[in-house]
Length: 357
Image (cartoon, rainbow, N blue to C red; front, side, top):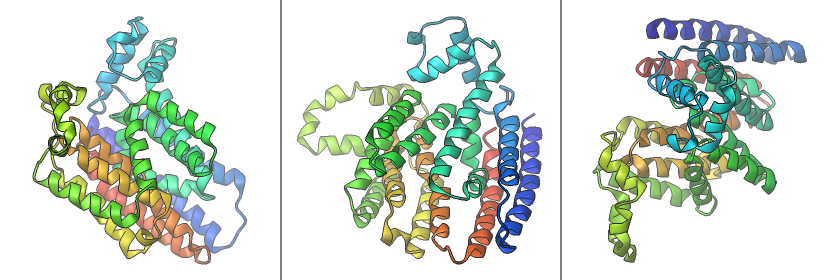
């Protein structure tokens, strides 16, 4: 089942990629005026592909789908919120979907919220937002978010949109959307801390901090406990050892530790930013990437912390296209580089994704 599912994704992905490449090449190189109807049709086809293969998947696809199906069925039986270790808005979503009495509808609705909130964020920032969406479809974490860690998939686009509104000083909208993100998944607080860190720290300081934290994590030193023991806060350490973090660490065997492969992805992209001089300019998204990279490495000793790395990775396609889009006079360069990125990412991504379904 899983191998057939992966094959369907690969075949349809590259089929749609060829169609999109031909269309966008015609628009860019022939200097034709975009046909909004056909342009929207291309985007609709991509969405339809994603919805059919990911939103309507069977619960046997993915490592977490069975758990989410069980949660949904418990909610439809009227079991109270206290029986769930999930955020409240996600619980409400499950109970509302209980009307349909079909977990496929629940999976579908979650994916629709994810995909349309992501597209809305891209439309806020790009004219050719479908190009960036194409890059997202080329990344393995897009598929993992759509199948294995769907609460994160609901939270991420909302905190992205909230940060966009914060940066444009629309505080009320930003605050409301950030609240939605947190109510879908508490990792939103993780993002807020990284955002504040990136706002009040220079790029060189962020890079140095990332290197220092990486060193401690590489030697498997629990940075949180070490910092507490070295400060007056160490006096309350016995109390903190009974916190949720320590309790989870003691009862679970899913302690990630230092992940060289995850660290290497961030290192290579930081190197890319340096070589393209984007690191020097330090846009809000570049600085946020650095802040999230710091916290993802910091969290390697936490249970289930491998999932925190994708918060920084999710910014990579956005930053890449943001940098390419600045070359307004050379749209051909944008076109070829974007397609090259898509092909390289997809080849690497489907290899990693095949291990998780």
